Length: 304
Image (cartoon, rainbow, N blue to C red; front, side, top):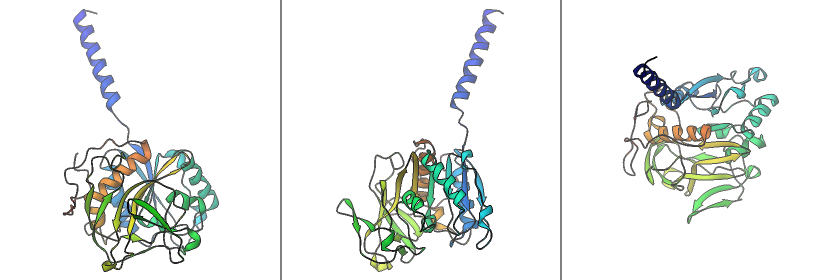
């Protein structure tokens, strides 16, 4: 083999090795859905598009039996996945499914708790520890205290009362409480979210690891009158949990402002990557909302 051919082949091999090193297989994940008091046939499609169009994820969809049907046949092989997105609020899973999910998270699995998934499983203690705060489903003071932000710190309120409420759907501003976290790094300190529910009076064991964003639940909108924790992380065993209370689903993919919000999509995508990998590689999108202006987009990543 002559010298020029050897140099050429060496260059090809080096270029191929660089391509292989830079190539990144999509993270395998699953969306669990099928029962919800919200419009799950639309919400799970939006979630799948937001995450998969980033080219960071490849997602299966696990659809449960309908309410009242035999839930014992519902089973997910969590060992296949590095990310689980919960878009589920319905009948209790089987004890085997509960145990498999708990083992998955404790062992280091990533979980995104999306919107009404924090309404589910009020009597499942492990689940309530994973989500930190929940609402509805019969939750009350026995489920844990209220948590709210005031004077630069989280506070607890052990008063009796319901767990979970929200006022009118409206646009509202979110305030960052952890600017150096990988999920929030580089994002604005304040940004305006599109029309959505603002969950308040949520209760639970707490255990929030990183409080990322809060929003003020105004009494003028029939809210709590408190600054509510809406986006945060939870550490459960070796697992990473990203809990985002935003994203009330609309009537269709085209009539869905809370999920079309560029802020929601960015946080969902960044939170999912952090859950699955422990880091965030995405740049700050150019269309991220400002403190004064909502930003809507189709279900794709703007930096593609």
